[in-house]
Image (tube, rainbow, N blue to C red; front, side):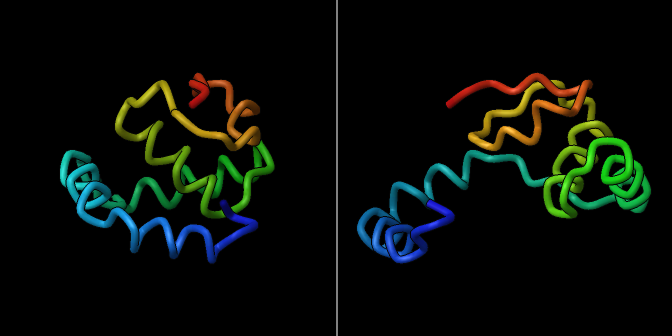
Length: 85
């Protein structure tokens, strides 16, 4: 989907109500100042790009041990278990 943003735009238009209901179920987490520091350490340790490092740092900070993603880069992060989608 990253390689085809037009598909994403059309999919969102097609079923926005369902997507909104799904997002309403999600818990939103704030970026704590400590997460920024952890993020920099993760970039250095695991070679993740900034956005991925921020996601991993947020997981570590809040004790989240599993992540559902297609992104293979998270498999390098020893404290996360990647759950395939």
